[in-house]
Image (cartoon, rainbow, N blue to C red; front, side, top):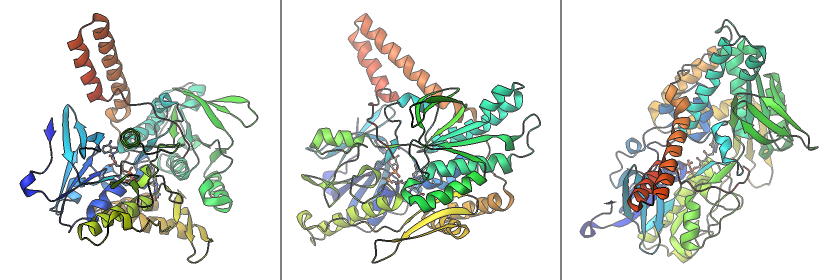
Length: 492
Ligand SMILES: Cc1cc2nc3c(=O)[nH]c(=O)nc-3n(C[C@H](O)[C@H](O)[C@H](O)COP(=O)(O)OP(=O)(O)OC[C@H]3O[C@@H](n4cnc5c(N)ncnc54)[C@H](O)[C@@H]3O)c2cc1C
């Protein structure tokens, strides 16, 4: 075990931040000039720009462009260090967090803790669906999906069986929210334009792309008008939209869908994408156990008006992990939450404000956007002083989406590379990032096999009644992450 705490003699106020996403990174940057020591602990080495994951999955951009290394982003911030590790415990009595990297456990002291560990995909209690329909939350997910999409075309090229070809060339995206719409639109454009003429035995333009949702509308949070526009645009691209269709089962070769009237039907499809639900980080459950704080159905922490855990004025929970009325799970919610927490710490440090005098967090809604395809997006921006929203769609909304996402991408090199890739992709319909490695596609299965092996070892050790072997097997099991807790389900 390692203790990563600062020696007592040189001790300044210790701020620990969990997560290097929007909430964590923006909180850390806000503390740049503060007279504190900041430790940012994250289980991934980069700051991932999730809104562009669909472009990674469909070969428009490379992972480095949307996920710069966090320690390099914070390289010049001298009061800040970055630790790689997955936080698994928070000791609120002794004010420490414990994190794990491979077999190494690290304990870090904190005076102030900002937890911004985000959310995972939710399969509504059917976690085994993940094996057949990866979600879209991490770089691994996006690269695995890229491999599966392109792999389906490759397999179809080798097949001479019509039914098999149809199954391979049917792509199903589950969840018609912004991510689902973006994925469906991009798979359709890729098969129709980028891959057109690249195969000899199959015609990629004949691929079926199905976007389905249990809800009755596409892009429901954007309202009926923009939802209808997006539907029309997707249909023009050839995307089949199936609403009021709930997935009840899913396997390697397809899925079963239940209609509103209760009838069930099967769709044969090898490549499925899941973008239907979110579940807050399991660190919320750790906090509930340690502090008694309530969680909502999606596992988000019900924080107080100052984004802290009730009774713990120096434990902030921000971003996708926090449950605050009127704050959606979007980048701006996380950025503003992270900055608010940092400002509260700064104010306390300067003796300007006691925790009990903090002004409640107030979310400034800057609007929302989703792209549908090349040259097409929907945009909704609140009109100041009213409860109404300005809505637009089409080319200008799409340009707005590009500009805004460029602004929030971290690092000028990432922006420049992305700009070049966009220019190429949107002017020629070519894609520069269509490489796929076997590991990207098969890593999930390999980890699954490893986990089964560990469980077998544990069962064997228990059957043999050998306490040392049981302890060793349990330790390996924790390191390989096979004891991940089952998660409750909720919708996006
Ligand atoms: C595909 C997709 C598209 C999206 N598109 C948009 C969009 O167009 N516009 C928009 O505004 N929002 C969009 N969002 C939502 C937006 O990305 C999130 O709201 C935002 O990223 C939340 O920020 P966060 O800091 O709470 O969490 P995240 O950005 O998810 O960061 C979580 C961090 O915590 C780390 N972490 C997790 N668990 C642990 C642990 N136990 N120990 C240590 N570290 C841990 C992770 O490695 C990561 O660094 C999209 C999200 C997705 C998935």
